[in-house]
Length: 171
Image (cartoon, rainbow, N blue to C red; front, side, top):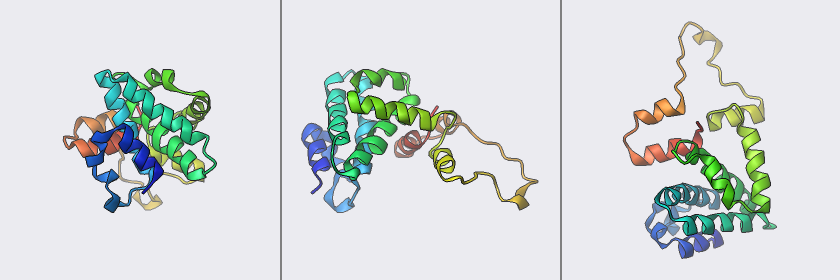
């Protein structure tokens, strides 16, 4: 059993029923921290500041881990997902800066820089790899209307799909 999973389930017993946290699912630590990030934004909206603090404390602890997987789970799984999800919510991502520790404050700023001018994870990856997001040259005649994350979310009724879109896009 993953130590990250154990830490999350101990702090948030209600997440134990989430399929991502079931041992049979084989979810990665990064994915579990992403779910914790979404949960933390939900907790913030309900006023559970203590619950939010516990999650950020776990992320700070993982950022000091000697294992790259732990640092990645805290950075990409938790902090980046908090920024993305909160960007779609009324509270906004700046509301979470008060919970940042010394290491997470540095990582938070680095993530903000990586996402500057981008709306989707695909754009971030393309910028990092040098890939392009243009359609193939033979589709030049097709008009392409790119929908913003806000427009996409307006039409989504399924809560799980909404959660996924919030996690990989930014307002």
